[in-house]
Length: 628
Image 1 (cartoon, one colour):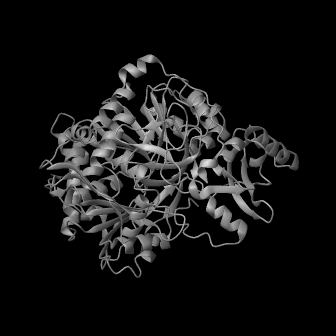
Image 2 (spheres, rainbow, N blue to C red; image 1 turned 180 degrees about the horizontal axis):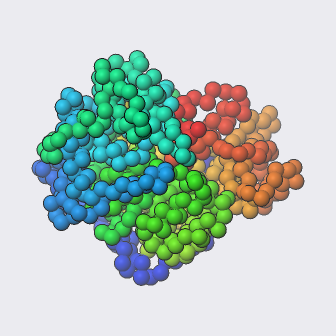
Image 3 (cartoon, rainbow, N blue to C red; image 1 turned 135 degrees about the vertical axis):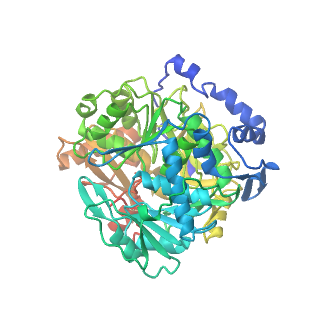
């Protein structure tokens, strides 16, 4: 049982400069959270009133467990808030998007230019017969056209389904069929580490046995341009209309905005459905307040729009706030390990939001690379994707932030649509702890019966009340949606194990399906992994349970070493002893394998079930979200 966990709770506390607390929007966290708790619906109504609506709501929220309706009977179009209100309110010449290619090429779009391109694209889609409620599958590299197409779909009420361009034929085919996509939009290729990676060929195979697809739109980037088959394929630029205006489709707040597929531990990928009104409010609100986004910021989120992080914190959140977004097709280690730091230096990036996996990779490469560049423009750092272990926090804080930038570690999910738990800028930071509930959210740690557990005791992470950007269903599988709200009482069950300290800060211990029972003791894989990574020799680690006739399970660790360390039996013994001294003898790995890489999703989460399946000779299940 998760509540039996003994959790190592010691953590440093970093207190930010008092001036930060005085200048950020939510510097007085307690006062803001108390305002929310006193009247949650009034709190969210105040946020929603900061945005443009075609018709206001009759009621902020209706809750019929497990179904919610937010901003009931209101009408809107999210693109009016992403584009029109900025173009018409003095920001038309402000930079909206900065794009940096794999080879260093640059493209810039002001809000006026972005508006015009979205209108032309929207009219082009309409000319192909795309209408409100139709699904459009977007399978593209991270180029401005991907964002333009996403907003064009929202403009005309089409449901966009963005699929990460690293997925293969089978994964793409299953998503096209489940969403019943009418149009698939792709590019001839993407560029990765200076090499051309074909995309259209994957689409050609993926649309076989996908009868809903009527046309394939192709962005031809390469020279000479590839041949298109006129029976079904259309050039992206030829699709664009010359008409620079396209009126926004009137959308109900509960109309679907997009479907985004995410992989579970078993079964096919789940199509998470988000709706227009609540998602808009959540993305706007969390971007504005968690990142304290300001008019002069250059915001760089290193994710891809193929993931929820890219949806909320590349496209919708920053543009809803009239921000400047930097995107890049480049990888963090090509042409060298300084490329990302050079981008921050060159474009005066102020907010940098990346994954712990990337941070640990940079740790392996050493501080010399970032120290070559001027990172003085940075004022806030963020982390997303999986728990930010204390060692990575320390490196991020000292080497990249130079001990002056707050770190906002964030916990949330595809299903939640927005940040749920974080340490707000200006609040004390505790390495290893995510933080507290974002005002507007009621998160807690409970036992299997839904009873809150004492501080320092492990339990299950739940969200106790609905929030605007919550998913509305799982596409074609509403029963799967209901399971989120019925597994533990009437709470939303996140599937994560967590612990609270005496101050209410929450630490994520790992997925509940990553609990390992050794001799009757429950051990969270994430805690053992964090202990391993705290050793100077270890860059990354993953821990699984293996069946054992006496103990039930034993721990097996897969370890990536830092540069300068060599695998040896002596080092294995040292690491086992290190874990013993850190967590106690019950948490010691019985086996350690030194490896060069670990199976991960594109968002940076280690897929331990794949390691477990390989170790036990079992079927790993759905691996469509694997990075490689």
